[in-house]
Length: 284
Image (cartoon, rainbow, N blue to C red; front, side):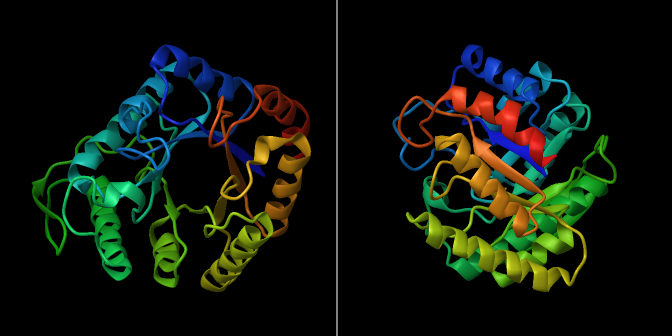
């Protein structure tokens, strides 16, 4: 089992940098930040850009992998995004994990326009991922689709990680799961929303079995975001319990959140430190 932690992009860098460095010191395999313009429940709170944050994190660390959780087509064009990916991959020395998803939440309409139907979102995401894949592996791309267009899209010098950075793709529906397997190096899920932990984990179990069917026994990295129904770092026992459940379903990676002082993911850094020192080593 590999372990990741998400640090929300809400801190001034003088306060954020020690968290990223400490995540590496604690032995986390990957560290992530959200890619949103704003986030439900924190619209009135400070919020910083994802790609500058990950670039700064790359300079503040040396070994931990760095991930976007998750980039969507809501406010990204694949060609402009390619330039950001190339920069983060280069600055980090090939440590970037490109988390991708179809997009939801406030970002869907914050820049205006009508909200897409679920089917349209998947259509757009399929086009987005296919074009991004092409741009990261080909220089000089001409493409015209329903949602995106490039005219001689130049993408030199290419990724440090070859043939391109790994995609870790969020998926819950049948078509998205197939897209994840086609283009991804891994699949990430938060499960389906539920305030009840048992109900939430039942959705995770169902999704994992659906992925089993798509994979047909092939190995594939699977990332579970642990904190959708109950904050995994609410106690050491809670963390070990959900990690064990994830392992039983075949997840290769789990992701928690850095404790916040209040509100969502509120918790104690002491619990985080104990988990890193005592629990995580037992699962490696």
